[in-house]
Length: 283
Image (cartoon, rainbow, N blue to C red; front, side, top):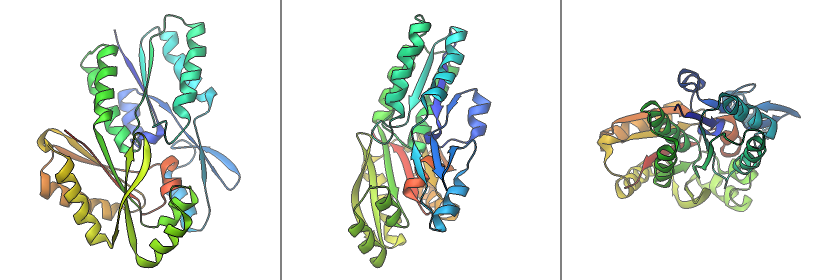
């Protein structure tokens, strides 16, 4: 039986990928200048980054229960199984809301086989997991097999984040305002990662050259089996920097593929323009 896949806008995959693969789409919400928008639907990342450079402070919120329910009902009415791979519960309440909504839908459609997986991943870390799940769906795997494989895939997904201006993380409560002030003065670039679904600071370096060198070192220390894996790079209004990082990764590791895509509004509203993130699997 066909297994349908659902993902949200925090996976930072292009809308063309959702459309081409008929993946259900759940947008998170963004507010700017007192107006509410749906991420990647009624507002795009470029709009957010321009607003942030102009000093505005966008806010984000989880996907609405109504939006989630409407997507779930599409598949419930088909009577075919579906799996929703959700943005990390440590960074958004969307997963918890989806679980609540799923229980409501199952009261109306008790035979509907809906699985909800907390990816504990963000941006293309989640996006790569969606791509992995989609391959399994196309190959005809059962929903049990897909759920198990995706959970294992997510558990091995490494995230390495850095930001151009730590002040944006401070606004979102990710680091202290004092740290942001000092970091800005000294051109300090933080390296952060996602641990158990939450953003955690790892190191601080001065300048982009040292930053790139350290990222490559971390990939050597923690990655492997490069010829068989896809590396993801997401960026925020700094595609040239991402392309430079891509070149260094290809020269160092020769991975199967390196994919690039802009960070979306939901995550970019917290990390700010100039963010760079690298995603790969650990052994």
